Length: 555
Image (tube, rainbow, N blue to C red):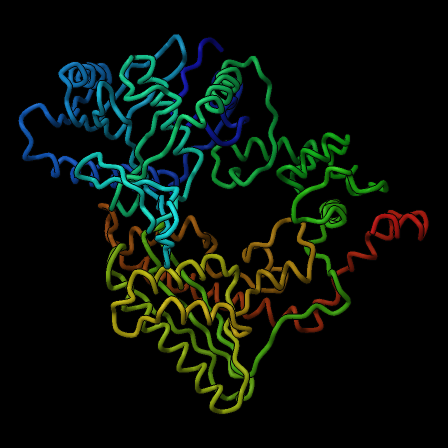
């Protein structure tokens, strides 16, 4: 393949994707980038432009040449302008582009370079949150994190935040540090170097130590360059990244043809199986030996065997117990939240069922803001949702009725429940973080996703879109899904320059209503009799044991 030159995108993620990205065109075929992927790219670019304008504004009163914006449309011109600014000793270089290193195989650009001593600190801007606010910081402890204000490089210990580290950000900074070091422009020896990271909130620069990962970066870069050049072979494996990868249709077809075990078992567990010679789903389905000694992870080995047998036979779900169970109540409220990236939660959809009064209609109620996120109006809509939910809860208690609110995978809902309380606590009706935490910890907040995992082995995943159809529910919109809803939302509020399309608001409300109705249908199905037609996991496992002794040994 020749000498490969790697950029930031090539430093992390699936190694097989990297190999395909660098493969000759005749050796691989890819699908076009999805509209959602393009939207993420455009949103990230818009965020970077906004923050660069902010940084430039902070330096606007400096003498000429102290802060340089590199805006040449040509790559070679940008490299030349960046070199000239460094040679002139500019304090800030915005939109800096470093010269492509064809010998070492590196290319890179930094949203900013800030001078420190005789060199520069690289700073990058990303479109996700990079810190978490610490609700009650321990002022008597030395914080591990340092931050700097945006107007200048003044790192100080920050006890109010913790770092939300993402490997791709750290590796990109490590590559920029390596490139600056090769140019003799790094602010410190690589073993002592740091970088800067500005996230979605753009309220500080996070100081990222790079010296401690320099060796890891060098080793990882060497392997990835070898993969890109074709000297290290890779093979497809199903991983979480596959769901948004443009190569997935090609990889999926190959994995299905090979009946690869990664289709039902991922991560380190898949590696352990392959090391044990269990490379196909069929071999796993027929496995009769002991659990591998190195088995790790939350998924039980027996569950992987059940998943494999289910995949082979086309069984969508398998019961763990004779009678599945899920928490029920007199008054039940299904809840589904819609958010946009990390900008906020714009919609809280609800569906109330009164099991004590069959005459009371089951009505979908949305609490929504159509002001483009981020917006303070998000706090107003959240306060309205919370007030309604607590009113129904209190009314149930006063009537001596039980109450439960349900969501599907509380990780997302809990994040925005807490985040809304933290960000909008000064608005009328917004509960305190303590109040929200108490509700989340109560038995009246039920995660149906957890109930599914507790009751079933799910060979093709536990997502609501996969499980609810087994219970008989189908979405009205054939394109319904998380990625599609991002596109709809962008059009619904004309986000980041998108064309305004008010019909997408109705589409989003219908999608959200279907999500809460799907949750209701699913949990009622779990508690009903129709679920009993599914096979039992123990019955499937029993087929693999030649004697009671083997089964006991397995257990």
